Image (cartoon, rainbow, N blue to C red; front, side, top):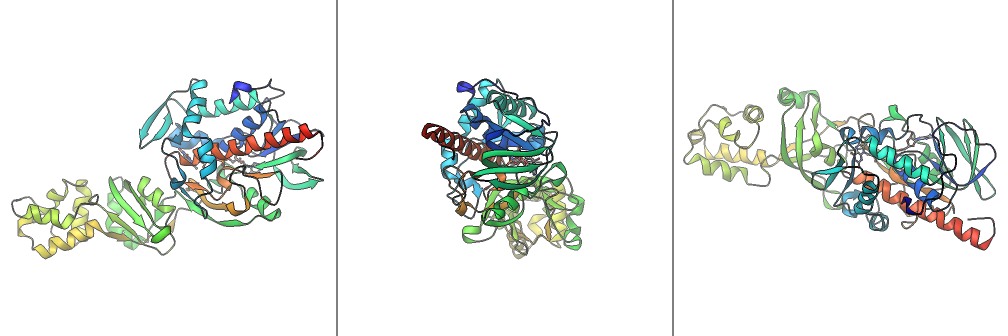
Length: 431
Ligand SMILES: Cc1cc2nc3c(=O)[nH]c(=O)nc-3n(C[C@H](O)[C@H](O)[C@H](O)COP(=O)(O)OP(=O)(O)OC[C@H]3O[C@@H](n4cnc5c(N)ncnc54)[C@H](O)[C@@H]3O)c2cc1C
């Protein structure tokens, strides 16, 4: 990015009076997508103002990945995203890849490592990513308006005018990067959806995703003592095009189930639907038990403990009405078959989710039918763009959401800068 950077103008972060200056682009939201977009547009010659109501910006980057920011995933592709239009993300993801983001990290000397299945984390701290994005904005001469609440958005001719707590901000283009609804206590609002509706764009219904699931107290009682137990499982829900299936770690908690397995499947789960969990990783558990019945003098729970945490093996025997201390060779085949089936197909119906308070992302959002997949611009409103989580593109757990934030931001940043150049070349006012 910063290779063709122009000299920074006033780029310090703070609440500066906007005066009457007109910007080429106003970016609403200084999170992952907003900062990236502002930097790209600024470095390609556009005058950019970045507006955020938070005084401490990019809080979601700061808390992500346990403070180390899982900033991308090497395998990110359209198949890792949920959207009413599964193809929408293809173009942006192909044009700005995880390797492009790694090249940027290298230029800033930020160390990283792969943790698990292509998930890349900072070696030191998520702050490194925030500082990198701030420096890139600086290199693009981006003007900051932080601690600046946007009350509403209006038009002045073809321009957009943000009515903010620091006075009006006028720009030829508006990029909405205000994120989703998750974690309101660190600044999430529905402003992006309201702006979309105001300009006639449709919204795909939103709901919390990548979120712990809850269970009715009575259903959960037998498993409550297992809080803290974790194991890799296959977890699935739904059918047909709406089905989700993952092999991930499942964590038992005091209130229900969590861990990557549940966070992943929560994005596919619909209220009232069941989850199926395979505790045997796809192997036929009944066959496994029957094969061991022949020569094993082990007690049932001890035998199962070869495949799962001992506390879970005990609780499972108890919940199935089987004597955990009974030697396996004493148990009837029928009982072992029933046990095996339950281990392969544990069926649970969650009562709900922990909601936006605990959700990592918001499913749904600005309907992609109303946006260009090449530029993120609203098809019917020239100059109005939506990027990042506010759009109906939601990634799996594992760095995919940040990759979408970067890729959609670069697509829009380049497009607004190109439009500005085209206008300048024609020597007319417009976009
Ligand atoms: C706990 C947690 C951990 C996560 N970990 C990861 C991870 O490791 N890897 C990953 O890929 N994803 C992770 N995510 C998801 C990821 O953080 C988001 O998908 C990503 O931040 C979205 O970027 P964005 O720029 O679209 O929105 P955001 O980063 O949410 O930025 C939106 C910005 O808009 C501002 N804003 C909102 N409303 C207004 C308003 N009315 N006026 C002015 N400003 C406003 C906000 O203050 C904010 O700065 C995590 C999320 C959470 C909550």
